Length: 106
Image (cartoon, rainbow, N blue to C red; front, top):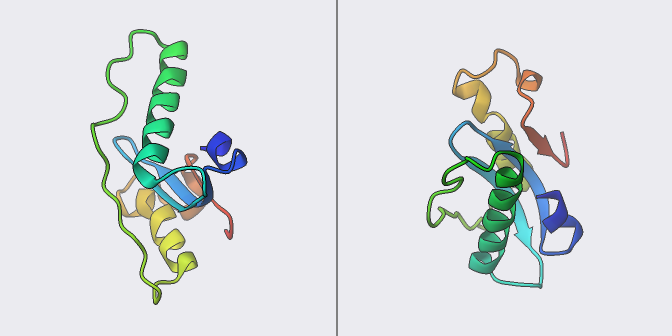
């Protein structure tokens, strides 16, 4: 995710990696459309996982679910909702206790 951000594919605002899925709030860059960007991320990250553990089966499901933000939605509010997912899922007791998240404002 950091490589895609640094390479201009997107601007990452917030993310949380849950045990079985990823929530990621970003603004697309001008390099590609959403499908191409997600394909690049999923193939690159799956390759990296398999370098660590070659026995790893499928890393990501086919396709993805997206939600385009409306003008009246606040990025920071959505980011807070995203990074609070582990707390709501019972994976931690306090907001900062979960390790697999980041947000540019928090």
